[in-house]
Image 1 (cartoon, rainbow, N blue to C red):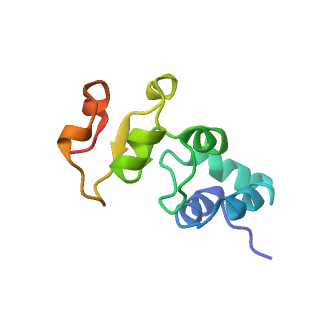
Image 2: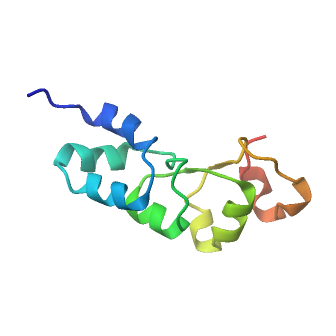
Length: 107
């Protein structure tokens, strides 16, 4: 049986749909657990709380998702962990973005 390296597993994680699948994958092996730690961007198809994302993917520094989701979910205590917010796949109105997080948005 061929083993899939953590790097390739992390690529697979980017396309996983659903929190239940993510939870199950994390428990499969040490390689999948390493793949979770390798990710620096959240899977786009998972729309859960940002706190859950930080617990599940400990090294995330880029949040990807609709602007409304990010603005609703982000807390000030999590702001220091985030380098970038990418909501380029959705329409964003600039007047909705708070000044304290404006520099973190990918333009």
